[in-house]
Image (cartoon, each protein chain N blue to C red):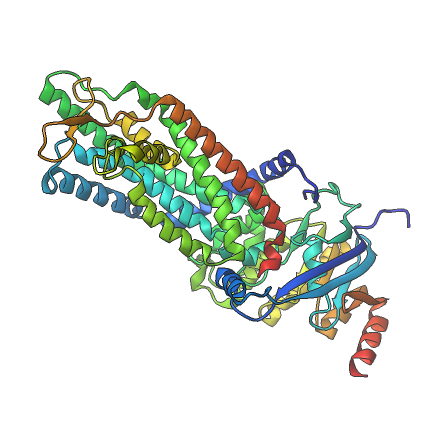
Length: 257
Length: 307
């Protein structure tokens, strides 16, 4: 293929040091000092020499057991974690140093309970890199997508919201940021069944528009439904990478063996 | 996204790219504080107004100190002190409490403590404009009538912006330092609160810095050292300067207080600090800011891993 990949992961390694038992913080450090021993530390290889290319327009599912490195890889693509060794680049992005990436936020992350829905929408937009002017022009679409039964709730503090309303609004903002790459951790479709269908429709639209989607999922049906490719991570290494059914089959045969 | 080996100037450029987010963060802090309403703004000012009234009453009528307008002298340093205290303590957990966001989305993390600092600065300027300056106006008008001559603020008042910038650099530097440390050691915030509370007595709010210089209860040999140690604390210089910049000497000479109560010997107060000390303090505040910024940036990529 002559076009550069949307995401290029080259020889990426990442270790985490996990503090052992005992108190965290200063108390732990002092306690360990007084006891005259170094604090127990465990090194975890979250990613171990991972190399892969993801092309624009692909929808890639990352599968694997808990602790296999899926979320670490996703965090690295979101640029919240940096590799110890190796490189993550976005060669196909308009500005490769600042790719437009939209991570779908966890329920409530970035929402301030005392602020209104509208204020939180603007804040979420800003944190995802949108200017206020852009947000103002997209606001009607976002609200229409969230589709609240009682629109007056938009002017109420979000602490009065149900969890469903929370995720609807968060999802609505994220999908309206015109992202080049969309990162989804578990929450592929949220809310009631009607809203879930809307989420899937939006994901299909993204696929048709040639955007890149990377998601982590434990839900085989969701993987089969949207992914065009699946990557199985095991102990921080790529164990299988290819067509969805084949990767799922490889994963499950190993899993149950 | 900044590359691993990014330089100081590259970090600044990257933060500048996100200036609109910074504006939004500041706005959000203020929205939360003022609860989105005119009444919210009023409530947030009710506290400083009440404090100002109580301070004035107590030091004017309950504790008689032989300085004209002693309460105003306390007041002139009290709000800058509150700015320092809340600025540092609010910022200490500015990153920790945003960890759900920090874990998911990239943005220059230093914007969080800086936004908290700027929001507190905005609030301080509001307090200054709504409480301190009007009170001083009332005072100057009253003094003009009493002394039958126009009482004007000292010319140094023009340097107030410099003083505010200097204090903000100090607060931002400490905010960056503490907020980064608090991600790894959650006790930081509590420890900072305890230290800040003690610091209240080590800065000239309820006393004058000149009283330290002439502290007769201290042996003469260490008096100079103690005074120098005081002046090495930027907050001492800042507060003494607020006092000097805002409050005029009533009749052109500095007010005098008894060296020891009941004795005839007096010392001049509200002299401010000398310009070399002022400049040194400004340099220290700038250095603390740069240190805080560097400390923060050297650790910001490990925040996500700390939890």
